[in-house]
Image (cartoon, rainbow, N blue to C red; front, side, top):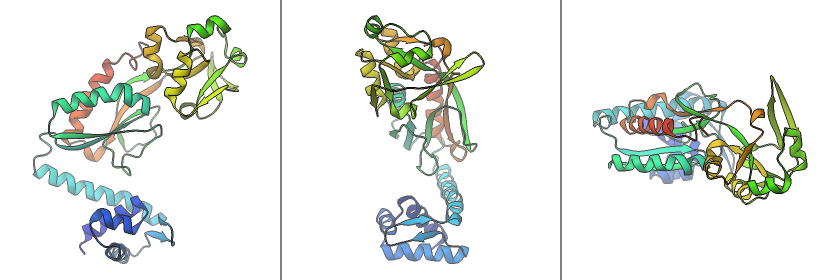
Length: 302
């Protein structure tokens, strides 16, 4: 088996944690996949996987080789795409990811416009409330909220978002409006678990950071559910400005404790260095940057 094929088999086994699953994806037999990896390990003189009857996991050497292997295949695919003229006209499948609510509210309209502009492109929109790996999960473009930690990504900042404590006018009429963070301890709180992660909320008080341990009355594992409960008057919640902006504009929610908000978080459009020249990626980034910078919910106007 040629070197590139053994590398492709290795990558699929690493992703799927299974020789048989990788073989099925690649249209080959499981023994052939096993022989391909054994051949690669023999050539490299290192063990790439730890194998048990149930699990196949990368060794430390395997993890180091994985990133290089993916880069090799990507470089080959880019060279083939360039030769075929795919870098001149957007074509192929583009995979885009973003946080769930952000994707639903603010990315899908951009995706729909993009599909209308480029008939040769299809899009996979993958929305998760977790940090995704563009390299390992084969994602082309991501919208990231917060400070970036991965130095291998190319990023364009398009705006920023705030953490907003809010409730409905109906709730505040019945229970009163908290004047300082400590007042929240006397109120019904709606905790968006996927967004907050911990029931200890941080607030800024001058140059100091205050931490307040809260006891939520309602905990939701979906941000949209927490938003709905707040709009219906069941308590106070804290969500991102892009999540609550429309309800604030409509008057269904009112923001409170604005003087205690932490610093805004940046919003970036990110992609991998090796894919900069790809027309489908470049054209989507250009459109996304333009539309997101026009978006009042991340431009600091909300």
